[in-house]
Length: 312
Image (tube, rainbow, N blue to C red; front, top):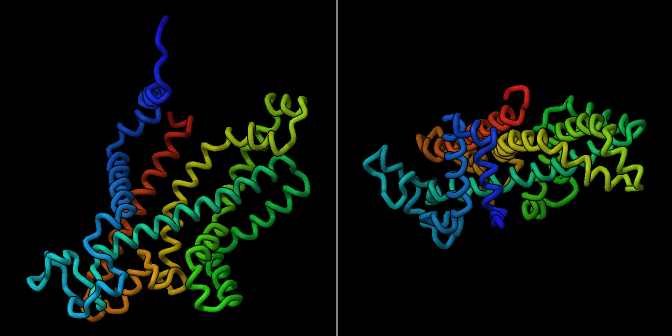
């Protein structure tokens, strides 16, 4: 009697024999982007362990360490602060590590919020049709006429007008996640709706209706698993857009506060002293942001092509 392979081994074997894995390993650009993304993720989320300093703990800061230049660009640099320090004596390298972690958290959370809202509305719109479909899609059409950054600014402004500044700073991360998530749900809703319109007339959905399953169970158990491919592609691409949107809002001063610095906040703080010649405070966070978004976008482009059967 033949022994059964462990489930994990069988899954790994199917993955390495799949067209997606072949497409991945045959694209050097995608491999480099994946390696860069993985490196940034590991360094960011392991910042409390890997960062040489705790940059936003006032007890560890000294003004005498302020505005030290990077060691590779000036003889006045200090290897204790390899990328230099800002005007408060905060280590730029450590700030980037902690800021990248916060940017990634906001990006992932925003994408999840947008996915939940968009998938739910797309399923309802496509499955029920009629007036429900018309109302949801018209709302989506109206939102598409406004750039995502303006929608996020509007939502953040409304929240600021309702609650105090101090309270806003305390819940700033939740406000920005909600604002960005509500800005990106339309793509998911329209994509899922289109897929549901195709799937709901197939035999397996008709059979589920015949045996008396409720519409909610049919949508969740049967329709949703068949529309996840395009959603994953959108989510991957939107991760980079969400990070850029958060950085833009923080740079404009309406995103995360200085006590919770993301990459956008670090760039804004560095930009305030850029004309004094202290370029490293804003340039290194900017390079990190650009590298992160570029790597994620390259992975999103590859995933879109890999999951497109017409390109296989």
